[in-house]
Length: 145
Ligand code: ZN
Image 1 (cartoon, protein in one colour):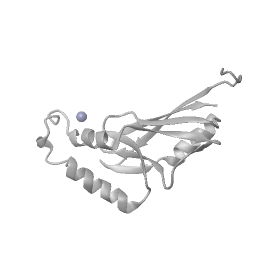
Image 2 (cartoon, rainbow, N blue to C red):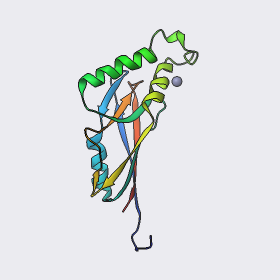
Image 3 (cartoon, rainbow, N blue to C red):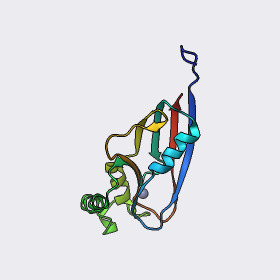
Image 4 (cartoon, rainbow, N blue to C red):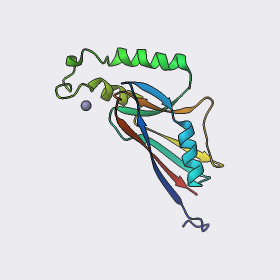
């Protein structure tokens, strides 16, 4: 309860993904929007984070050319193959996914104003999968009133 007598609300939800390929970028803005509606919070902050160290949550433009450019750029920085170029890849083969995740980021925080995500122009929230073919999740935590 704050000085004006309002009670701060909290909301938590996990969004699950089962990407059929190793890498994919998915616009998850509609799912995050649904969380805000479900929470009933009108003014506050929304945290969205990947719960895996081989996946990202980031904000950028929903434009297919740019998504292709991300794939090419990330493959230059941390090529998936040959797997044996990475010391991490003994037992696993996902060193490139850890590196891609690090550069694309773990989470985003977006302001909520009047019950909506308070974005800049063209901003959308993406889940970046870099080691898919299994069920993985994203945490949405919203606080406010
Ligand atoms: Zn690993």
